[in-house]
Amino acid sequence: MKVDVTLTCDLRDMAAAATDAEAAGYQGIWTFEGAHDPFLPLLLAAEHTRGVTVGTSIAVAFARNPMLLATLGWDLQAYSGGRFILGLGTQIKPHITRRYSMPWSRPAARMADLIDAVRAIWESWLTGGRLDHRGEFYQHTLMTPLFMPDPNVVAESGPPPIWLAGIGEQMTHTAGAVADGFLSHPLATDDYLREVTVPTLGLGAASRGRDAETLAVHHSAMVIVGAGPNDRVAAREAIRKQIAFYASTPAYWPILELHDRAAIGPRLREMSKQGKWIEMADVVDDELVDAVAVTVEDVESGATELRRRFDGVVDRIGFNTPYQADPAILAALGAALRG
Image (cartoon, rainbow, N blue to C red; front, side, top):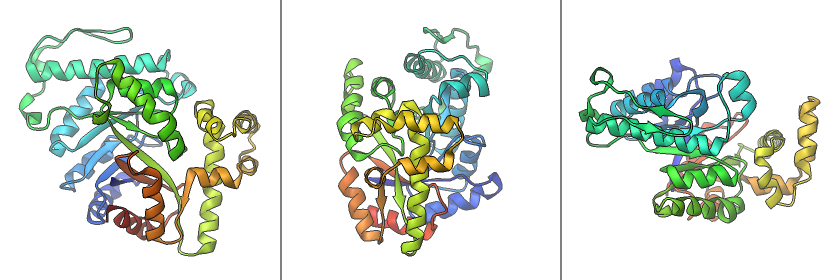
């Protein structure tokens, strides 16, 4: 499997960070949409690297429209020389309606229509043909020569692949049906990926007569690393807090159900409404932490455990560390995995 890194640094530091990541052997660089735009850093990453894949994991799809996403994806694919992945996710309803002031309804169906629309736009640009996408949520029926980019800039690579993030079976099924790759959530365990995610992707692919084997899977694995036992204890507690935060959201409860922890989801949700963010970690037991995260006492054994859990399930892997992890240890772990 390929080993990737997520970079969240300031734009002013992105060029150096991307150069260092490629030099360290990482094969992909991802950004995510948090406090900053996810696309701008990738322009710098593409400029200062030569071979790594660059992608968004994720950009919030429903905060934008298909034409905007098509343009961003096309330009980054052209500039990177065919190394860009357009990774999309939905976010949850309160953020879409209250933070972005955008419409929300039937997210899985809306996402499928959005991806179909983006591809219809690209097809129009590639062929010079008429744009005529008339979906349930998006309609794109006007494209004049002035607004059509030069198809030759992506002639070799084609438009970028579209990857879709998901947890629940509906969105995972949609990814299988319409996406080129799947972005798993850090809370997902290897058991959940094997027993729920991969079969559901297959069903989605079959629904549109696609080959599920062509669908790539990326997982950002939670890892507990540190120079010594005390560092790993602190890292473990940071991950426990992160698990509690994720598990307070109903969208992630199917993972809890698979691991016989269904009861803690509503409890954590209620505590989050009361602002009991610190106390929430006490609800997450050690067994659940160990199911979600891999403890790395040394890089070789850590790489062995990551392979045991994820070989044959994911094609690309990254490291999720909701704490200040030593980059040298992560780079060594990545090297051990690649080796």
